[in-house]
Length: 332
Image 1 (cartoon, one colour):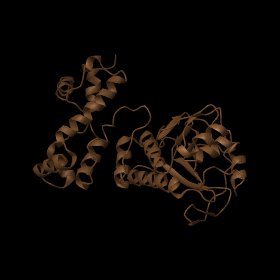
Image 2 (cartoon, rainbow, N blue to C red):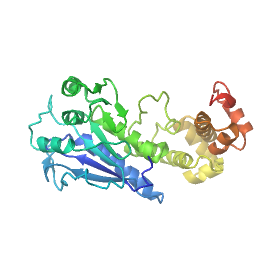
Image 3 (tube, rainbow, N blue to C red):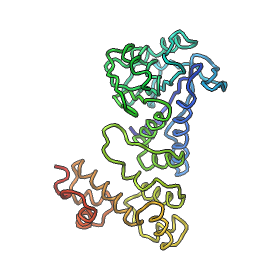
Image 4 (spheres, rainbow, N blue to C red):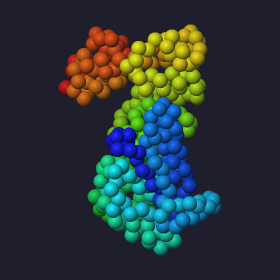
């Protein structure tokens, strides 16, 4: 989904009395930072953050009062010219009390939603999945929640495939996370899907959090390798390479981005990232070429898309970095 085609994605965090503050504050900050990074590079914001609920004011899980909460919108009658994510959050306690203030009104509103992937989607953090289950929105879906609430999820929604021991689960129009910090993991994954993995890595680095891959991803994204450090100049170079891996990168050009000399940049890269600058560039390009080959592109086109000067250079790098097989057979 490209958010900039039809306008920013509206992300509506549903706030109830007692909503766990980390369930929404962390993901909201990730989205804000993503917008900030996009706008700094001259691109429009990808996310429109809203805070909605059945009450105009609510006290959070830690006692802070949240005011200015917008009413629950009539999304059924909206034109929905842009995608919309509805985010449900956890509540304190061992179980979710559907008689709590605001919950009956919310459940009535949720039952009117007609979820559709890419248009109107549901995102749950922690026990927010239980609220979705009470509204019947998880029937026929795979979902996860906090381990303390897994049995409750199975009881409330027996037609939901409740998945244990997962950071988050993606299933069509429903995305669910296990709780608190895993909500940040889920939103970083969604940011990567909308804005690209390089920007998601930049958001994670800004927040000083680890970025885990999504379900079914066996390896760390090439854009995230060698980034377990906090050196700002090296991150600037890695960000620049991630945004334009096909550019004509030289050690001098990288040094210009880092505002240092080529020799000093090489020392910094090895010390902080554990790899030489040009080797890092080759690894990024090789993974991009591999992805292009898997998508069915020819070796020549894959080399061009990844920034290699020729298919010969791609083949040479392929073997130098120890990839199994050959580029010619990768897409088969």
